[in-house]
Length: 254
Image 1 (cartoon, one colour):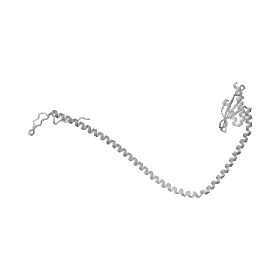
Image 2 (cartoon, rainbow, N blue to C red; image 1 turned 120 degrees about the vertical axis):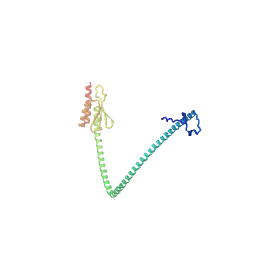
Image 3 (cartoon, rainbow, N blue to C red; image 1 turned 180 degrees about the vertical axis):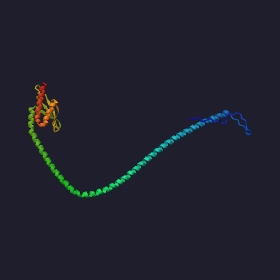
Image 4 (cartoon, helix red, strand yellow; image 1 turned 45 degrees about the vertical axis):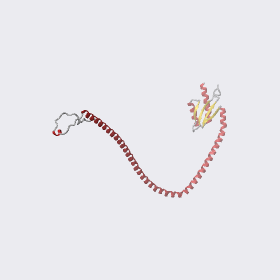
């Protein structure tokens, strides 16, 4: 804070000066210089405190006014934003009303078309009934064909089962299903020293082409046998060849 300039006190001690005739007519007053200086110093202290308090009050009020002004501006921004939203909604509402009017006009046209279509529903229903009956007849025919195929498969299996049993006995082979469309085949009597030693392979039947996913034989040898099986579709011949391959592989390991 800038220091206030010192104003000469009217009560400070002055040098003796000559008095005019007019001044001579008044009674001269006598003042105590120390008392005047104390009064002057006390006045300056109070004046300085008054100035400081006034500045403090003005700063506080200015802070409050600034805060209130900020709130007023925020409120103004909110009101402007709300006004824009209202204007946009009013615009959208007008567009919606226009669209609804257009849709109402279209609905009237559609209603007219529906009235015409309803007149033809009875004829269409009759046509659909005829088509359903035709589909049911076709379905019955397909079911009959499937039944005949199933019976044919069962007959073929009944014929193949004895042959498969002979193969199992002759080749010393057993098999089991480990999951859907996957069979595990076991062969014994391969080793001359251990007739119970098992040689096995896993055959996947889930696709049109057979696949061996695991086998005791070398991979290239198994692949050749499976390729030949997929070409010839001679499954029993494949079983004989893979047993023969197990036997040859055993001999080569000796």
